[in-house]
Image (cartoon, rainbow, N blue to C red; front, side):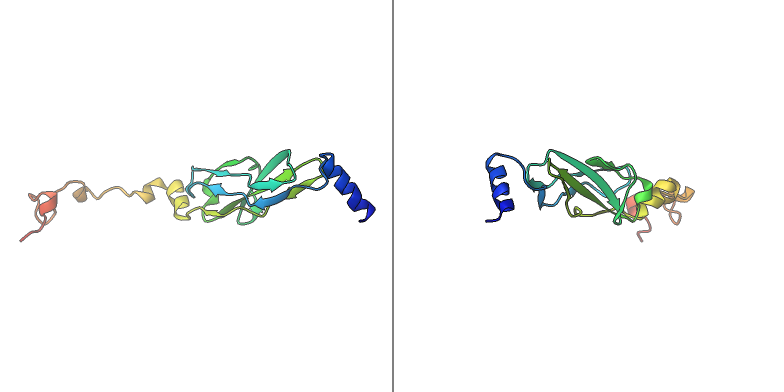
Length: 147
């Protein structure tokens, strides 16, 4: 056994960390990919006794500025993007980043609805605003055009 291996073994026996954290289970994102919804990222599971965790939210693989907490609120600019979270664990020896979490894709149609709410729910045509049919104005909604 090398001197270094003996030193590592002695350090472990004394309860001293001798390696950076190692990710065992990748972080997991939960939530719905809708603008205004809050996503949550778990830290995953680690060995190496991490003492701190940091989070970085990603959109299509690129870091999202100032999105560095376990929770992230989806904004209109995220429409059409795949959102993931990268967790970094740190101990007294160093830091390790886990692979990216599962992706939550934000619906592209949600951006149009958020930017133009009237387009998502157009006003009813005045003739359609009542349960009567234009062809048979006296008919109730369930009885239109029965002949």
